[in-house]
Length: 440
Image 1: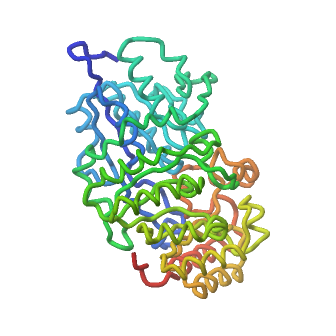
Image 2 (image 1 turned 45 degrees about the vertical axis):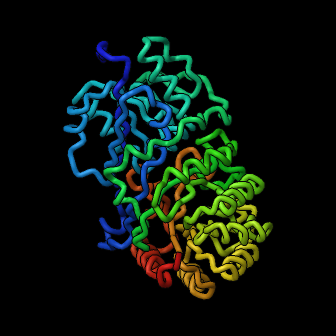
Image 3 (image 1 turned 90 degrees about the horizontal axis):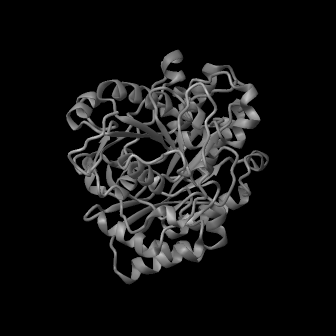
């Protein structure tokens, strides 16, 4: 790659992949109601861009962008292309890397949760570097070293690819320093896409703010551990308040954390600041059922601060299955959490995981639970052994579909107990179970 010599700035193109997952129920049985369309802003790229203030940075969100990426890349002529994505987007990330490498010959860097958990997947000729976990500090170091033509192989958390050979790298001990909190997200770089970021089932425009990374828990199906090496790292209260302020007149804020209230004292301080400063926003947060039960006063205070809806990972209605998932919760706590939220008037977006081992009776029981407990917006996924998770290590011998395009959480990649078409018909019926859209 030829680096520019007429400017001290590097040109960095950050790319969010398009919605690209495949659907077994649609392809095989004509069931087209299970596709999930993501419309949230690419916060991870905005955060990365925040550290690259001395460079010329452009974000392309292919989930909303109408123009051809190759043409955009040729026009921008980047020195470095960065792509992030989830497991179901991994194949598309490779395709993007190949297209841009051959189009503009930029250095190609990949990151995101799949790259963090399974970096070997991206050890390919058209990819130059893999950034693991929290990439804000790592990417800044990489870009700076490339610009100054310094060694890039000794940056912790950054892998130089070696196609056909084992990769070598230095593990990064993620800490608060990796957040580079003095450098806020570059929300301005997606201004042309902003009207596309909304809750599709509610039609509400929303903005994303992060208060913490990682999760202190260890659910077997969750891939978030790769983000921070298993640590839970919070932003300062002041930086959270700053980022909320950067949302301008956007009325609805999604707190994009794996577990917003993982540090209750930290969350209470944010809540206190919101109330003291008279911030008039509506908030959506991810909350564990056991946290709600343990500290209902905190949830009540947040309701006063603008919390209107919560995403709760109920996951299952069977204690033995919950235990097998490593949830460290049970059905009684889930029901108590629902009661507390209902009493506060907070809408419930309930996450439930359907095991491919379900029989028809278990589908019916889950449907009754959702209706009887008046879950405002139930969200159903299929238990999927995502590479890099404990669940994957447990079930990898049973996997019958290893094409990552199908790892959308709406496909069964291990055998179903029911005949497959009946399984998807029952799953489709669950998707249509919900109540009216929650009032938020």
